[in-house]
Length: 141
Image (cartoon, rainbow, N blue to C red; front, side, top):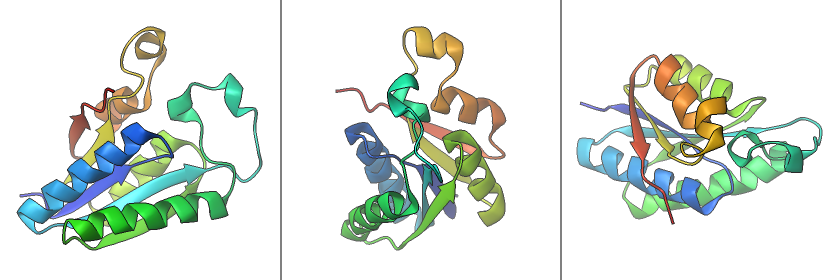
């Protein structure tokens, strides 16, 4: 059913839960996992952005994090392909999903409550623009 799964993840603990869930889906359906982490080519004032929009500062930051996420997938018996994509998190996830022909996008629910829900969040934007099914994982603490 879900042969190609894309999960968007940053360096938050909630993102790790989304990766765990995506790896579990892939293990169940013997699917291929693609882990996407967006980064900025230059540093921006990250403290001025909602955390779900804050991409990491460099490709090397993203690569280190993506390596950690591929290890999470391996613990589930899943091979993961890492995608460090420069730019906006939403667009990075959506473009990767289109490029790999994803059947499912997995994201955490961070930013879906309070003002960010009204202003827009990564999960909300993904749910409205995705070219495939979307699983929004409850990653609340």
